Length: 338
Image (tube, rainbow, N blue to C red; front, side, top):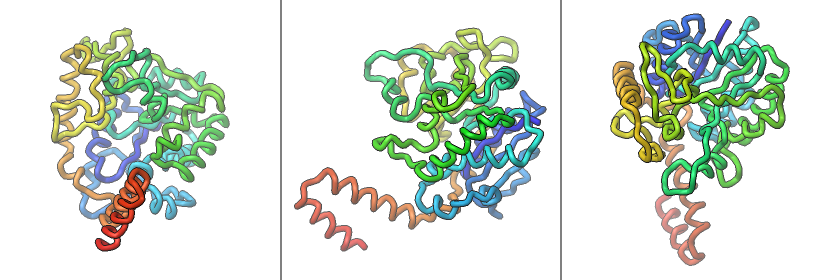
């Protein structure tokens, strides 16, 4: 059995459906599951997700789940449960041959056979954010960004489910994500991703993928800007096939922007096929009811809880950067508002 899964809250179900549909289109022998970091709601007709199984996180019995929903924001929560979902599926499906995680905003563009072949020899497959050096300039991303947030992008991770080596990695990784899976880059913490910098050191049979066609995204588009279509396949400049594209942070309300965070791809000429990829993805989002799903709030985060968190964060930041006499004034203002 071959399994691919993603994790998202109800507000990302349009993206997750595109992922699942594209997986079935190119790899019909796979099972696809959405790990729902949310609760099922009567507001959604889940029959819309034909042939896609949805497993709410409450069903996988994470021992400290009541604790992590109190201490994590929605991004931290979604990423912290990734090792736990891996462990749950490996335990449940004893006949698993391959298990792959994809972020919900990924689209599968080709067969996954090369990944399956790699897993016959290796236990862990990782994709670096970039594969070539970057000079010092004013474009983003720069190399230091990846040193802060992670060398490898954890929007993709493929594992050998039968390996004790993988079981050891998941136990180690799960402890980190459930206990200290915070987005606190200044403390050396960035959700689930930063930890995997250590995987090639701590664990065996970790393969770093160097083909351009794996995990193409806005942060590496400057080095993978020449994508050309031949018959029904997209071919990269290194002659590898485009296997999956990561439409990270794409905002369907601003289709002219490929990314709100990166602009390095503006320093090169992009092939017309890249614009075509974004155009078709935009239309798929609309077709899969992105305007409806994107407005749904995660049940684990109430509006008043978010306001309190933001206020506390603002108090901490302001207190640390302003003189004492101004802090006294700010404290009085907060006290008055409360």
